Length: 435
Image 1 (cartoon, one colour):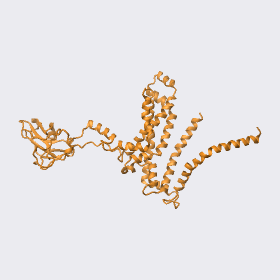
Image 2 (cartoon, rainbow, N blue to C red; image 1 turned 90 degrees about the vertical axis):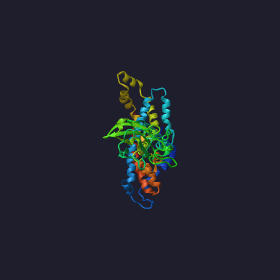
Image 3 (cartoon, helix red, strand yellow; image 1 turned 180 degrees about the vertical axis):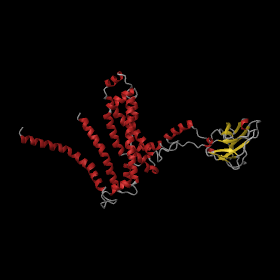
């Protein structure tokens, strides 16, 4: 083919290629390049957009405490969230590879990916609710706690007026004077709402005297609707069943017991001449659980919700990479005496390193843009403590005191932070493609 003809054909091919690429280039310019250029330009203007301020908005980023907190939290996200999701995905992929129900398990783990960030945020806002009757996390936590340290049925109980009981330090109460055998003791208390008393509470009754023993009654010296006599057991007044009573002499507990269903109790002759004490454990308030959405735990809590969503994504990609690992390589290692941990650490993980890098880099880019999960889960009172750059960008640009110049500077900063990770990903993909 002559030279001129070859050149014409090349030009024709270039024109055809340009015609096919033109729509994509137009969309790229309109949806990507133009917003980036405008954001850079807008970041150099003031709040109103009418005056050029140069790099003042970028300097404000360094001075603003809220933005610095968002940067710190974003760094925590970048370090923890991708690593946890990737590690969990790796564990799930490896453990489910050789079990019959592995596919069903993977389906369940991957299902959160089908939920939007907004819906996931609403779900976890309820999961982390402080009330154990609503929040699953606190319901489990309180259940485990109460298994080992059950809360009292009489929180906030205290001695009544003119009671023989006085504070004994640390939340305990003790009798003013030593008790004597054969003389019934009255230990009146108040302060517990009738609805908060145990369901099997019975009316209190006076204890009978017992020769050589210390007896008494502990009860709520207040009847619903009022009436009755102070420091006297009336038929309508409820007992403090199960309350622990200790006899203390010279700082040592010589005997102890618990009140019966009718509030009466009996101590042996060892209690004669001792002081009766109601330990502070009797009045310990119900354990309310952990404040998951408080200032100190809100960021880890939101990261936990993110990992719940994205561990399935990591598991699927890693599982696909694991399927391509040569089985003879693994079997050869086992034949040579390697245990499963050694096979995993020295063969599986190194072979999967490219896949793990893909997952990790993808999640790093993703967490830098996280916004809606933090916005929905974190209550308004702690949103400053959970703040991240993407959320700060929204609050600065469109909040009550909107400053789109500073918001654009934050957007440019976010772009600058993401670009190195994207360049690393592109370089790695090119290196993989050239092999």
